[in-house]
Amino acid sequence: VGLEALVRWRHQERGLLPPSEFVPLAEQSGLIVPLGYWVIFRALKDMQALREQGLAPLHMAINLSFRQFQDSQLLPTLNRLIEEHNVDAHWLEFELTETAVMRRSDQVRKTMEALGRLGVRFSLDDFGTGYSSFMHLNSLPIALLKVDMGFVEQMEAREENRKLVNAMITLAHNLNLEVVAEGVETTGQLELLRSFGCNQVQGYLISRPLPMEQLLTYLRLEASQADASQSG
Picture 1 (cartoon, one colour):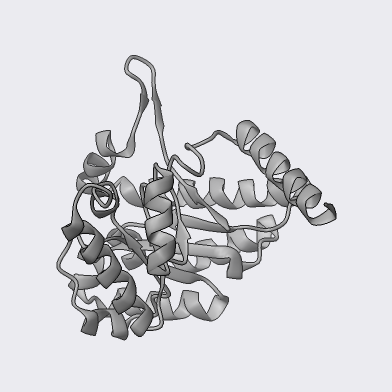
Picture 2 (tube, one colour):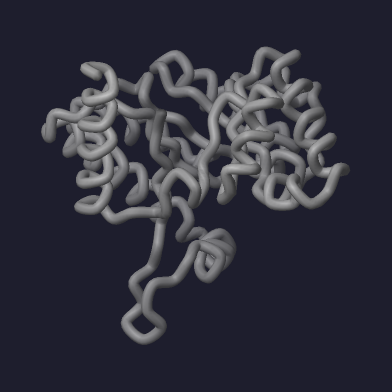
């Protein structure tokens, strides 16, 4: 269904660092804005590369900080990158946190509306871990909710988690929102989410994060298996 762009830092001494090791510092220092633009650039470049390899287009989800949405250069920069890489904006998805939604910034809302007119869609990341109200959700052009992996990973062991995830999915559907479950690692979790009507899942059960070369191999294999099943 799609991909998510995940940033990692290849540190000379500490090796490959996850976002939790450096993104908070980037937020505090203001470097999160140029970092965000670099991630957008790489994501669109990779989308172009996948298309040039003859692969079917996939949605690309990109995490953006609240500061990025406040930056006046976001819209012109995205327009330029879309044109440079010949990417259809309808395949782009920007993820916000619940904290960003709660701030209710007019600038964020206006930027989202302008991006939405380009075709970009929006999702609310790590749903259930913050304090968002559904009134705020209805005031923003959000199309998807992403259920945090903290709720998903305990579903098989805890009935409370099963009920909570089921309720989240039902509520989202009642608001005409699609649902993505994060952190799916077992077939048991997948079957439960299917029974709840979850629209999409992501996690190690589907694939671990992959660099570009391995991603190309993975997608080609998936495409060939799909062709084989259709012809069979």
